[in-house]
Image (cartoon, rainbow, N blue to C red; front, side):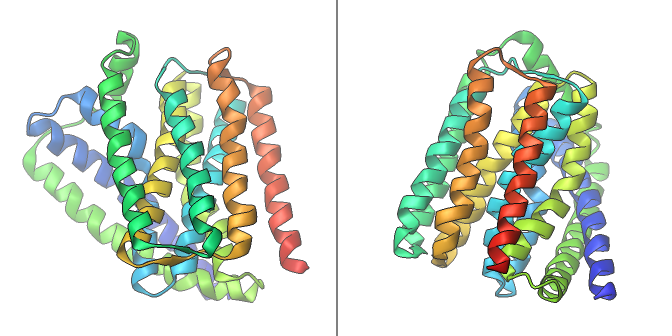
Length: 317
């Protein structure tokens, strides 16, 4: 048990370091080959922070731990809103100027609802998974088209997020380091999590939903708190919504497109609706005063704790 916990924590540390290295490498190479800092930043802000979770889920699928990967993908979405956004807003109120985030949040809500409907028969087919991946491509195209109409201050903030050195050798080295760190980090997490999850009485699905999803989200939550204190509310909320869309459409959709995914009835009835509920809590905040206050952040965090308690209560039934 202690060995498994130690390997799990080591894996999380390697994933955090690898995720940071691959973001810098991708940003540097993209700009070296002609992509603007703004376009690079748009992709990195929205989807870059999901790369450690993607590494974990790829490793889990290859090891036959599909339930753990599924739990991690959807659990990460709940954790994104409850923990990452909740803690960031409590650190400093988040001002959101990024107008296209509200439509993207609506896509996330509708996409999660679609997975619930598609999963009523207990399986997400390969064709349905491919449809989710195609929807992600459409989302990226929409975000890129809308972004040019955003306020200049927002465009500057997104571009600043992506600026880094563009030396070819440096960024190739960053990629090589990231590949090693993400490989071994995901290997340790996927190898250790089922062992200590079983010792705690958790199913593979619940292990992915709770300890793995929370563990992989901790570095992002810490970064979000720092960004909130720097008054980068758009970056924080963009991370949360973009990462959640990536998890739903690419991770879950990609898993199903590769090989049909069995969706347990409890997952369709409880976990997926919980992900919708957290997204719905944010929607009026983005459509109202475009701020996520400290009080609203506290509500998100309390809701997360209530959800964790509910999941653990289900386990004891």
